[in-house]
Image 1 (cartoon, one colour):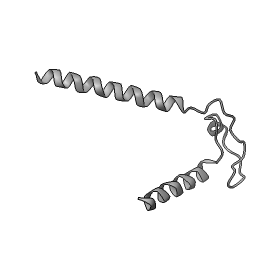
Image 2 (cartoon, rainbow, N blue to C red):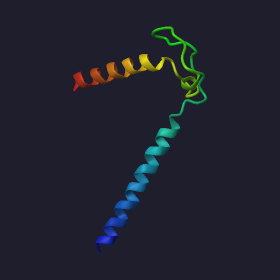
Image 3 (cartoon, one colour):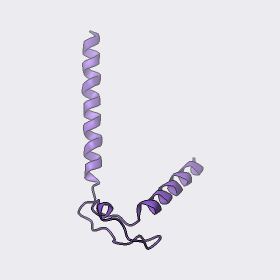
Image 4 (tube, rainbow, N blue to C red):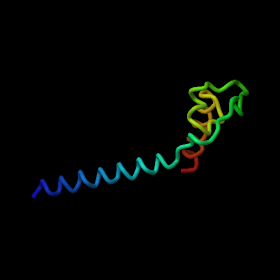
Length: 77
């Protein structure tokens, strides 16, 4: 009987993984044109980063932005 429970758990995990992957893929922004220069600092955005689509900030400024958003969420809790 434990094998049945294990099989069910494996199937459930596969379903959850598939659902999460589909949700992430549906958010892709490859079709949105990235900016060539960062909205925060004005420096040129690397072409490899631009290829991700929908990019508005250089890597460094995006890092600062993400940390700021994270800290605001932490304070709100």
